[in-house]
Length: 337
Image (cartoon, rainbow, N blue to C red; front, side, top):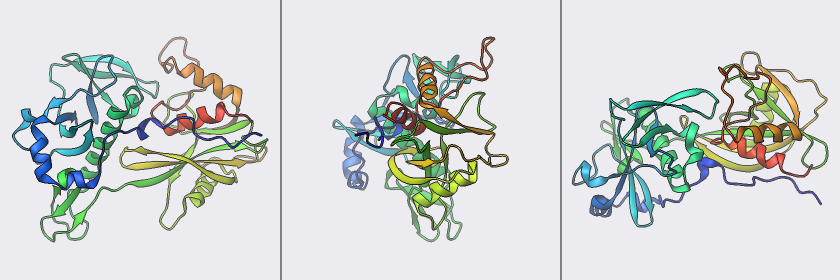
């Protein structure tokens, strides 16, 4: 008997191996003693980290090269295989070469290349990293984005300073402590009501996306709202579809700047008219499983270049490999109807 589809693999940015339990980062004596043997990853102002060219691990630096104890802006990321990992601000050399690369959005970009290391961003290239590196990068970027928005106290307006080695701030005026924020957002794969898993999936595109790019529907959870209620509301608001049988699939951190994506599946009537949210949704339509499979297979060899002479603007382009949307679509496409 056909069963409702589930995620067939862990989302790219949900992969993590480092032990990040609170007791590790609240023990300064332990962290200071282990600092000389620790490894440091660098994160620049554009959210990029150095990766050895053609490699799958983050390039690390020796912690002792940055002082006898962790600098004030050092963030403890966790422990893995007896090594402590930290993040520090860093920038590629000014004389770094600029190498053309293709990001997950199918756009041509440039990445600094110096000393055999490419400085890559998480959204476009997180899927290329191994589990440990993907987890470290995701954590470091999430904490960086949170810190940049938590430099002043929300109660008295006083300036804050980092404590607990990057995992909290403390107001220098009133002493209030604040911890990293995560904003929940739902993302839902809506399929038709044929059989158990449907024969078609509802995809939409925003006007700012590259040509041909479609994905499943998503939106932020509002105050006082359940996750399931958010799914129903967001799908209705964005495309006018009424969904039922909402069920949870899985989650993925999405530190752009501080979200967690909560994946769901739901059913809707494919024959009902769609009503697109003005200015937010440019187009939406139902795609067959065969069309999705073809688009997924085409995307495995890289994304089309919109500036290429043979670019086909009608080609369906799937979400990037770092997104949970990609995993959700692959899982649905390989499931029995």
